[in-house]
Length: 95
Length: 330
Image (cartoon, rainbow over all chains, first blue to last red; front, side, top):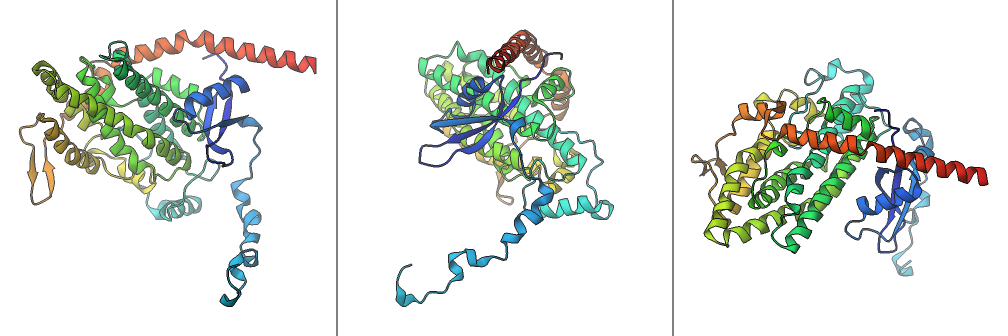
């Protein structure tokens, strides 16, 4: 087919309950306005959202799965970043 | 089911000792219940099989709009019409969720559409049967969507992340489809004698095609073992078919309708219904293009694709022109 394919857009929706926008999927559209219109039809047929973000998929930069080790492993041994690392006597009360 | 005959290009289950170290590590991840994401390593066979399976599933959703779209303008009440319209719109949405899951594997939606139109990709055999009366809208919702749910619920746990997530959305929405179908059947069986007869006739025509939706018997499914090892298939065809029969028979009894199978009976030993297998020759015939509506369905898709080409092209050209104008003004 000689017709040029519409670009791919990623869709993010914010639900009703004070949550942040969340990725829900993608769709094809010619521009941002069209993408929002399509996202409304494809991803909010049952009141799933009150706000839509779209971004052209080609503009998203992503970390690479092969960098998983160097990227995330250093956080593993820093248990002191979690509240449960610190023992506080029960006598102190709720903290 | 919506992907009932996924012919893989591989030669069946690959043994661990024949796997490369990468493939072994990949299988370990699947066995550990991890999800595979688009940019992760995956064997070529896994990618190819998934593209076929998700593509076939997506095409089924899209082609599946046709037998029901047929009745939108003739729905008996405004309420039924609104229900059916919403259901058919959902099917379009489900097709789109699935196409976008497949696209993460490196195939484009337009490519998949072209593969459907030139016969390289299939859709479910069920949509090659005609919907002759309004009662068929009841039978399709009740049986066809019922069978679809049975197949799709376990696929929410499939190994490929984007496919599993699409399945979660679809399952959430699909339950309304089955219930609206059953609701139509309830109205028909409680109506006039003619309406009840129409409901029975619809069940008679859709029962065996619905059983075929789960695909050939396990003993004839050569690619099942590899697909199950990869968790792109979770249950066997026969398991799901049995589950469908066990759940549907009491529903038919509730409606006061008779399943068109003289051999159907409860087996105390197995605690399942024994039932007659569908005619597999008919199944293979329909899936290879000779069902009652294959030509109509593909023609409808082809016409929509060809007639819409100028719209797709014009919208793209207009957007490019607007973008260029905006850039020039900056």
